[in-house]
Length: 237
Image (cartoon, rainbow, N blue to C red; front, side, top):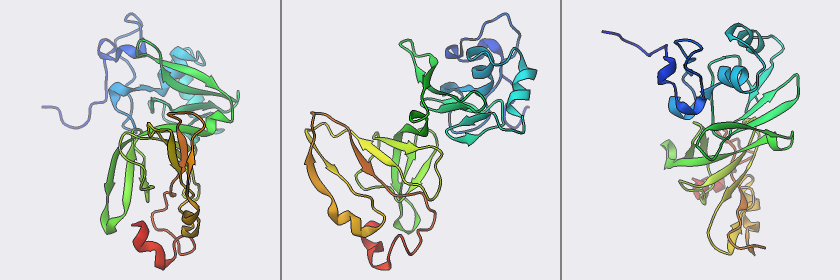
């Protein structure tokens, strides 16, 4: 009886949106465990070899990905795994050519690479799939790409869309968006420091059903004293 994770994937059982031909071999690259599910992602090898045509075979993909210079970045992070799963809205950056691509769906539900500029490659949109409260009454959210963001803004709920900077560092902040379905929405000020939260005000939107930006907290595991004074902890947790 076999035990452990599966390490192989036959070509005929690969997802159809990979668009792999049937006569090029028996096996297909199996995505590594990562932020996306197997049926909802595409391996980095397929993008480099079949879509972008940077490589002709598996050996050339290994040479590109394993290079010491670091040729491939996904969401601003260097990746050296040729089987790394790339999912919806991920940003793939080729360092030597300077090209950036965002992985999107076409009208038939297949993954396509959309070329973007440098300014657009510095952020991505993430869907909030879970909103909960952890230990010590710390609120957090979980996005569709496996991110766990602690100290989230109280206005952010499940099924909202947030705009995240890439790469995401503990000291960085980012802006989030939420569709309210009305002509007005709260324009929230940054929650660090707490004094800035008093400046939040109601501002009418220029257009109906407009997605307005919100600011949320950083992903620091333990907020420092300079960011969160002891007197304000009870009102944010």
